[in-house]
Image 1 (cartoon, rainbow, N blue to C red):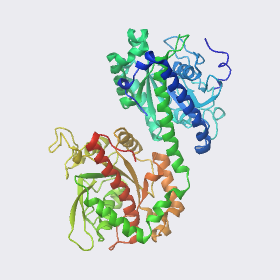
Image 2 (tube, helix red, strand yellow; image 1 turned 180 degrees about the vertical axis):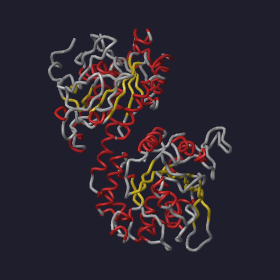
Image 3 (cartoon, rainbow, N blue to C red; image 1 turned 90 degrees about the horizontal axis):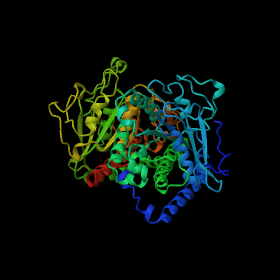
Image 4 (cartoon, helix red, strand yellow; image 1 turned 90 degrees about the vertical axis):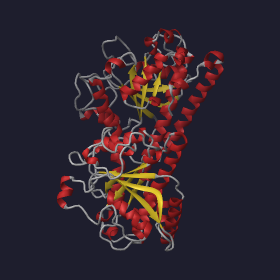
Amino acid sequence: MTSNRYSGYIQMTSQCIHLNSINFGTVSEDSVTEDTRLREQKEKLQELNDSLSRKYKTDHINILLLGEIRSGKSSLYNTLATVLFGEVVNVALTGPEDSSVTTRLHRYELKTEKGKDMPIRVIDIRGFTKDRDYEHEIDKILDGNVKPGYEFGSKSKKIDKEKTLAGGPYKIHVVCFVVDVTQVPRQQHSKMVTQIRKMKEKIRSRDLPVIGVATKFDVLCPQIQENVANIEKSKKALNAVKRAAEYLEIQEKCVFPVVNYTEDTVIDKAKDMLILKVLDCIEGQARNYLEQDLDWQREPSVWTGRIDSLENENVVKNKKNLLSKMKDVEESVRILCVGRTNTGKSSFIDSVMSALSGEISCRATAGLTQSMNEERDGIPDTKRYNTYQLKVSENGNETQETNVYLCDMPGIHEKNGVQLNQIKCVIEGHVPSRYKVLSGINEESKGYVKEPGNKDKIHCVCLFFDGNDVSEREMKCIQELKSWLRDNEIPLIAVVTKIDLLSEELRAGRQNPYCVQRLTESIVNIEKKYGFKRKNVYPVRNYVHEDTVKGNMNALLLAAFKKILMLAIETKKQLDEDGTAVDP
């Protein structure tokens, strides 16, 4: 029964765990522990309320619930409301199994048992089917521009202007896919997977975090229906979570099992514990997203430290520290340069070697540049996967080889360039140096490395952009690569090249390029389109026609390479220690 204190406030105008890490023992042994955890979680969310408005200029974390019809989206909202309110709540409508009760966009807010606002807002929309998606609606929904109450038709349609809101007041911060585990087996090879992929493509383009919530375990297993705490011991439940992760194509640790409040009249501590994990993940993911969103909104003052590094005396110091760090690397550390064709990947490798040695290098480019026809047709100048072992020398001493490798491969292009599966094979260490990767690579290919070691794998990826042409060509491949790298915890750095073409000041070699408006606009454009944190975007000017090295060009190149090298070394170290990588 819904409490009178709860009714009336709902506005109907409308970091991750594994299942087997949940411990339900304290639920039956000591309910006080669970009550304490719930109270602490509520206090944590209420404290978040202050930082949201002060730091992030928003008043709520907006969660979008996506799922096929009858997956339990609306019941999930009722469950969230119940856990936070402390009494069973049934505000969102639920209904028969063969239709979608939610036909409009609903905006739900949450309160505590004392009626205090919680900084979480749930956006619930019509469930999708194999024939009904959100093709013409999803962009405005994700950007928070749709008025509560918008009614979904039988087919996706463009949203009329009078039903939209300016400024994106309900901009989504976390997307939650809700999955009925009893239906996953029949959906795993259906059109539903295609629908989910299309939605995730839109979501990933905004770099939004995605989690999965698996429901109806009480229907799946009689023992769980009898006692929700039995979910911990249920192999059937564990397998269902794995299948749900495969169905959504996200990591298993990001899929959370829940049992919704449906016909309950009293609180179930085991159900509450499951929801606490979901809330904890939502809060953490939202914070990370808001931090990233905040990065590109800040003024270029975030680059103050980099500007200091461009001073001549600091360039010399940075170079000396880099050379020392490179000599200390004991086992192979590999850095891969990828990007669209003609974005300056090979030139960057030559330029880094030039900055480190003090002499112009042409090892990667062989002294060549692309012709205009090759640029227009997207024909990669690089034909093979090549690895370049970096060498160091100090004060005229003998040149010494290091265990640091810069790796090059053909550029990304829909017709003539490298494809995503080939890039993945390189990153996983299956491709030997000098291999003609454009010809294709698989387990049967000659030279294929079937069991690569950590020293064979890529430890940091640099994604290259032409600063003078930040187009959306090959956007899908780049976003899928970015998503795959994130899922596999491989750090990614954006390198912006050809900045000398942006303005006369940059062409003349301005000492502080960060105050040039055209460069700032180009970097912000990359951040917005591709979802990079500003601190992970590095502009450089490659050596192309120069015959001697220059201090101002070295400064930018070494600043970028320093960050890249540190990430690669740390990734290799963590892979060796425990098999995990790092977040830039």
